[in-house]
Image (cartoon, rainbow, N blue to C red):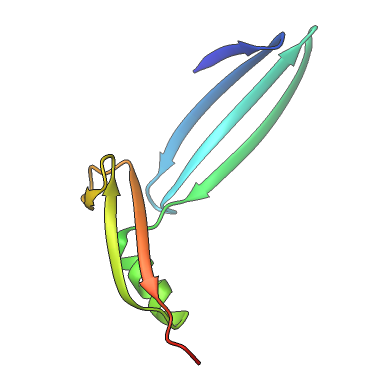
Amino acid sequence: MESVIDGIRVTQRQRWDARGERVICDWAFERSGVLERRRSDMRLFNGTEIRRLLGQAGFGQVRLAGQPPLGLFTRHSKRLTAVARRPAT
């Protein structure tokens, strides 16, 4: 993907690292012949992992919804919304 924003050419290339379950993005920013590169990566969690992590943090009654629109969370959902309750202490 490439675009120009305020005179800066921005190029993004991303790849999926299945082993690490991460999306790795390589960015290039070029302005007036000066090039700067950056990398970012994001760890992705599935619904089972989200439930486990919330449970370990003391939350219960975890509900997962997929978006768009808000409905059943499936592997085709673009986003995940988790709603959980933490017991009063």
